[in-house]
Length: 192
Figure 1 (cartoon, rainbow, N blue to C red):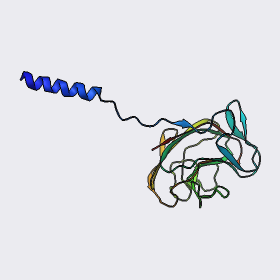
Figure 2 (tube, rainbow, N blue to C red):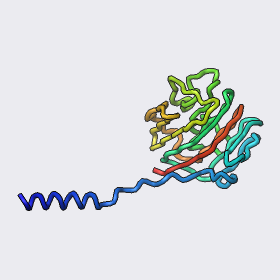
Figure 3 (tube, rainbow, N blue to C red):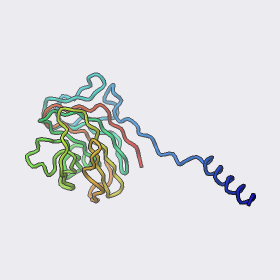
Figure 4 (cartoon, rainbow, N blue to C red):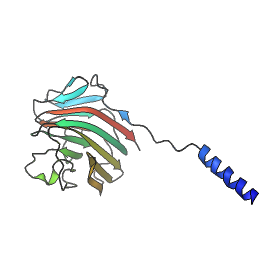
């Protein structure tokens, strides 16, 4: 009995002493100071105010990450006006022509005429119901991309759950300005 107890205590101590496999940490894609790591496409008036990315004028425009990503977790803090059209595009296949046909668009668009692919949806891939509202407050968007599977969580509500689509395997991340007022205070990524 004593030998058994000694072995069990020894195994327990060894298990506790073994370091857990560390997950990579989130790294900021936006540093709060400048556009380092980003390229602008389109004519919106992207600027930085008090450490926040802001756009409120111009036509369809994107801030595109210089790096490309395949499997990752993304967190973005976003504030939009009630009439805003924004979102985050992932795995963009064409850096000059960003559309739901060339990337995955995780939408932030409360006033979309057809709310099927409104806020929280992946446009043309994964509809949302019920659609969360983003207008007039800070929101946290979380995107998980693993191979052909995607999950989207918007303010704690899972809006897309493990949808499968293999059209776009890898590419940069793009922040969208389409209309209204759009602000991003944090954009972070963690490779899988």
